[in-house]
Image 1 (cartoon, rainbow, N blue to C red):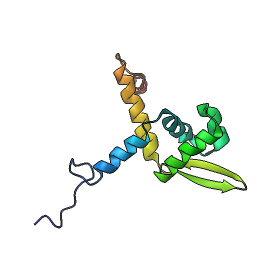
Image 2: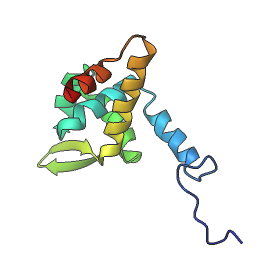
Image 3: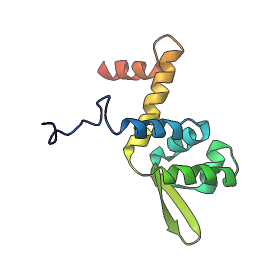
Length: 121
């Protein structure tokens, strides 16, 4: 009877719920969140990212390898240099939403609401 019915990805019984948990697990690391934030504006090399997140290039490479396996980032090679960029806009949006939620947790009116209020004037 329900054989032709497709389950919406956002339903509580969706097959994607477990995968969504893996996405949150991948982002449960401050360095990886910082890397996603750094890559919002475009591609960067490991050394550039290491300087931004204040970690060694070796540590950044390990985090980027995990993000690459999870399909958060992809690479482009130019000679011996590898450049990383976000696979799509969803990782950036997810991290932005998490930051917005964090702003709510400290009380008061979050900064992102002030920006929206000012643009409405």
